[in-house]
Image 1: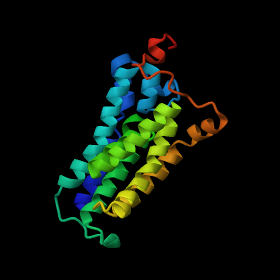
Image 2 (image 1 turned 90 degrees about the vertical axis):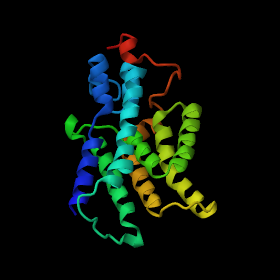
Image 3 (image 1 turned 180 degrees about the horizontal axis):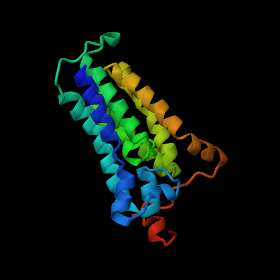
Image 4 (image 1 turned 135 degrees about the vertical axis):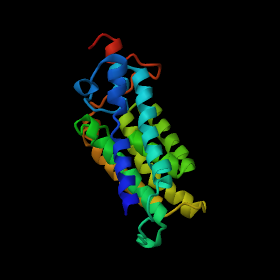
Length: 228
């Protein structure tokens, strides 16, 4: 039980590293929670201070998810793991599920940033890359297609989140891929969490006033355009 407690705590603290907030402050001295969408995520870092902080935030956010599910959950052992026996799943699969969920909770409610976090998309992507990289490549393809066709980052994120469990089902039951059943449950939980986190974006999409990507060239952001 101590191993499980340690894994979820480390995963939460990893998830709590506010990549977008810290990179924006370190590179430009700007608290992005005061500008743009006021969200402490990589998309708002791109929007407010430009591509350097946005790229760094993306790397940090994906990296902490990958570390939680791919390293912390797999290698930290200080006592025997509890035998969950959940739906007949292996204990290691359940541990990976816990680690990923707590990393996302940390990202959304970071202890290092007054519990004001991002929406968890990049962190979820890092977790899923650790668990099933091929499925994630298909999911990223969905994200890119929707982004370039609609220019809405929020719509792309929501669509990709819903696409992931769908792709798991297709690969598992249609193509015979050997994917663990926990991935489907994990994917559905993540999709629901990401949809809930994007409620305000969904309302703006329905009203037709959601922010669009104006250009795919390296962005200067509001700071570079002299708007801050």
